[in-house]
Image 1: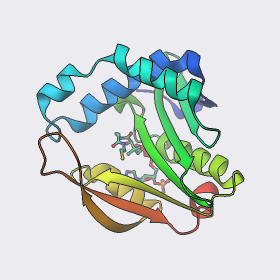
Image 2: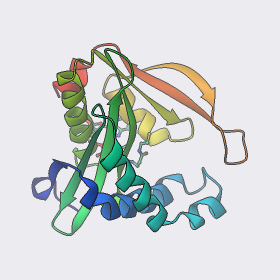
Image 3: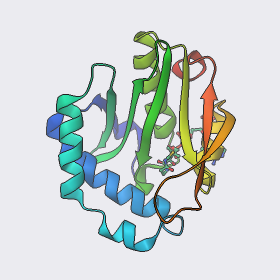
Length: 176
Ligand SMILES: CC(C)(COP(=O)(O)OP(=O)(O)OC[C@H]1O[C@@H](n2cnc3c(N)ncnc32)[C@H](O)[C@@H]1OP(=O)(O)O)[C@@H](O)C(=O)NCCC(=O)NCCS
């Protein structure tokens, strides 16, 4: 188990791609066991994801924000977001390894991401959560996110839906 006091948050760069990919694959396997098809999770390939992260961090538009959290034994989580309209931010991904959950780190990462996006003139923030991800939905609701709108998720054999959570005032997150 990690300790919050030992974890630092920093802006990730292309050199962090392999660590981001490792956390990405491990966190997806931990989070989505029973929710996404087992063969898909088993086939996730850290090397392929590292290539995608490297590309995103090299070629990303200026609006992209990728923050990572690192403890004494390496990276344990990340959060990424972007401006998707003149003053609208979207967090596309927020994942922590199980060993780093429940310490306050997810809230901190989301708040840090919101602060960067607010500084880039975002006034509201939204994100999408798989409906079966009950824990994450409770977390977003606890932080003031309001559920608004569901949509089907493409892929994974169909049948999955996700819900949008919105913070009309990004400051609610940024001030945490
Ligand atoms: C969801 C996730 C990001 C939350 O991060 P976390 O570090 O575990 O949560 P924190 O410890 O920062 O919790 C922050 C606050 O939310 C509350 N909270 C956390 N989970 C909650 C839940 N399910 N229901 C209600 N409140 C919850 C905490 O009690 C804490 O409250 P406080 O600040 O008032 O004391 C993290 O558990 C995670 O990465 N899960 C796996 C990946 C995932 O599902 N990502 C989201 C994909 S959309």
